Length: 307
Length: 224
Image (cartoon, rainbow over all chains, first blue to last red; front, side, top):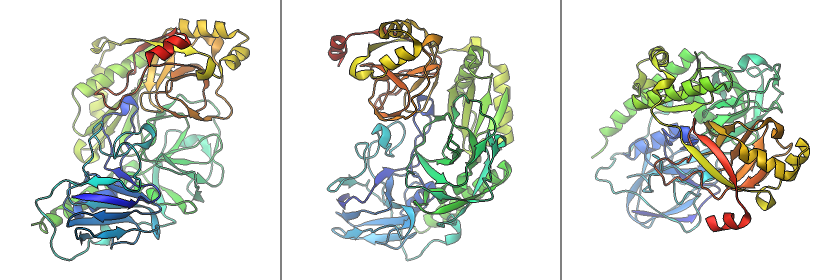
């Protein structure tokens, strides 16, 4: 089964759940910005959760499917097909996604998963090093992608319960745990709103708001960072590091967005706002386990809808 | 030794303060021990400077506290003498100045030296890879002679070509990929420091040693 890209959209890339085990070589985790959406759409078409799918940004692509298949769309609302449910498409059918009506990033899974080579343990596109995905780059008009063959498929008409999904919003409250330099700042991180700027990308979501002033002016030795780390450069405006963030950073770390809330940040577009709320590490861990349980239930439920 | 959470999916083990070399060796030894026999749920182990960061999948570690105790036990047992992997010594050829090193004259002016003296000092140094990061394969090198420590440029360049050698404060390094960068650019190497197609994609690892050798434009061209 092949997919022809008629219009590629603004920034459409092949993504999965990222590369593990290569951070010591400076290779970022990468993968889907909204990993939860990618997991769910993959499960909806009977794929493994970490199968390769498409990530759209702000404007979706227009695609033609060469044979009958199942697709599922999630994350932001780009029109085209209903979200969060398996959709049957016919061979030769054209599916056109538009501009994001809600959210910033859309995820389109195709039954079988996108068939691109595994590079350093992942299929996702890392644009900065031009590796993974389709030739290490974003899709262009006229590209062709292949999906692996499938032996089983979803049956019935149904939709998943929304409560399993993150509480997407254009003005979310995002939970954080303290960072190593949290105590060194005078600044109302959790009492005011921040606005997302247009300089945001897959490496980091840049915020603008009241200046976070660090009392301690000592230069820090660079330290490990991760997706979710909230860094504060000298201008006092926080950056939330995202999927393609470098592995080591030199700026003070005021906080870390908790794993289950990172999808909320991934779906913010320039001009959207967010607030931070601090939780304990124990609470963050409980939320990870709760989400893992919810995903396990979804996986079991969906297995019964496969023939 | 101190364990500090890095968000809800990683923990940083600090094994010394700043950049002391004993701490760096202990970090490498612990990283090696954890790589050799990974505790359940550990997905990535990153030695950087005098610390090791351990990334975990919470659902598979059997409790965060338990993972921390396990790491502490390993760290107490590990001896730097246990380091199995021999540190590599890598010679990096550099064509100093010219198109590939537009800031060489600036560095020289700030140090009150001639460009030739800067090259002799830089190429005469013995460098330790303190960490790999910032970009894939980028090595933070310690051991830059104090005379040529040079502050980062006030405005970073938007494009620094792959292979460019720079000085940032007390550190020097080579940009493996074309990226933006704020360091002072003094030369360029024809060597590839990062190759995604290789099993070990980064040419250097934390703990390796680096020396630089000056080459001329013709040698640089012949290398490619």
